[in-house]
Image 1: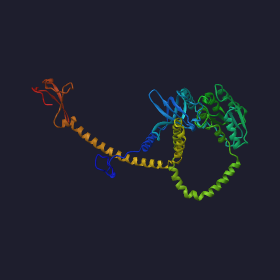
Image 2: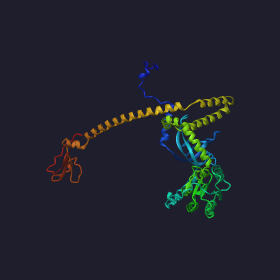
Image 3: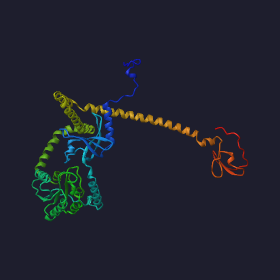
Image 4: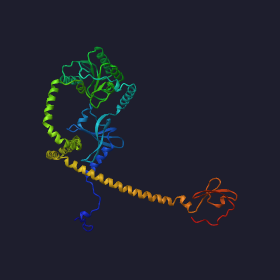
Length: 463
């Protein structure tokens, strides 16, 4: 029994108050709502409060004159950024809106970051893309097939860059018997556009390569811009050798990717795509595959249905790991501050927090969250039904009320609306004269009459 001193004790079974959400439930629902409402956003503003813990993740705020929003960019994403951003930089970010549940902080998980001044380059990229698209240079029908077993591979790239090293490393591993010819060129700077076009022409004149890799390693949009130039695009389109575009990282997209016969996300991936594997590897793989199928055939039949069911329910654990990593970073920053204040006790606190983090399992939170979502869905369905019933009754009542005060209902009781020859409503008998024609609007139709006589009332009619 519960008694707060203000009245008689009340049994918990008699408590009719609405169920209160826990803080964890509220934050979980708020995060789900944010993530389902904002799939991906671009935001521009001034960088503020930049911090970089030992984990390698970046934390900062993006602000304008009125507001700011917290941002987190995890190590796997920020490793692609060549230039470290600094306080006060104007930047553009692309990411997902979410909520850091442990603190209830609204934030953006950043997937891409660039200086705000890249808008002009992006506009030029889109204009050239539209132009070449209208000319049919991106059409699949004009693309040449890549040979399944190339006899000679040509590479148009820098002789000192990482791209040629990656390509040669992959080819040496997969099929070292294929000869490779490098057509050296600059892949960055003002002179790179003309050099790349000349290198492609040289490969055609040489006439030994039956497939041509054109590309370079990763970099900023400005670094990769020579592969967005029209001269390079037309050189690739006019090339009689099947071409493979391999520019930058997987997220980088250039005009060369659209024009080339095949696009590879990286130089290493280009070498993987066009080179066959060695026959001994295929033979060993086939032999091991047969043994594996024989060994697990019975288990696969028995567990196939269960595996499909579990696979449908399985959620990507990387998101939970990233949240745990963010929480660990938060604890690390708090720990650093505590060390400066109380150096002696900070080590014990850090160890305790890391042990708690290690011992915690997300399974219970996942199950509780699923049950909460199911309950809220049932409550939402009931609430919508009740709301529809209430609004339907309110609408019927309003319709009845509107009919009662309708002018047509008044006319139905025997009243009429009289208008003079100008169409004005006659409210005073003095406004018409004998012999004047008037019209009377009744419930069913309209009457035209001539005034015989006029009799004015000496007192005002009741309201």
